[in-house]
Figure 1: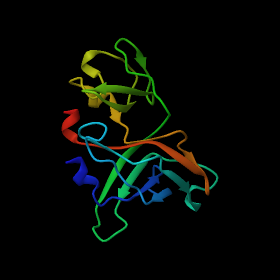
Figure 2: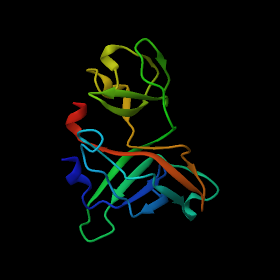
Figure 3: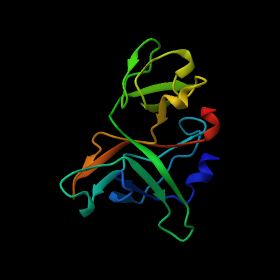
Figure 4: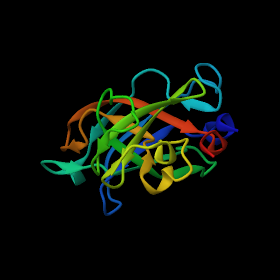
Length: 169
């Protein structure tokens, strides 16, 4: 299923909180689902994205849009952008603040999550696994070192993944 979601997708836009595109890269290609982790499709290589004039002297990217530059019109919108390079692993009993990033490995697949509220980690709110996790965490679809992007600035994208929804249910 994840492979089908990206079969025509070859471009990525980063957007600010108002939905304005502030950076873009075309020519994306994807590894096959199962090439690294079953149910997850990762962008090949390390794509580099470039800020455009809408970014001005620096604008925060909060959402992403994947789309097809060809004729299919396919797109995936509303994807979450997180800032970081290698978030610490989630751990029960830790206190997390809104905006904290964590990694969590579930069934051999590592996912990244951003805390939506302050809380203490417990089995029920374990990101991607606990019964109440969606109230505490948001899955991060695109992870970049710096989400504040300026016109002409280039940034390597550290992590870009499309996840089959069934993996987190």
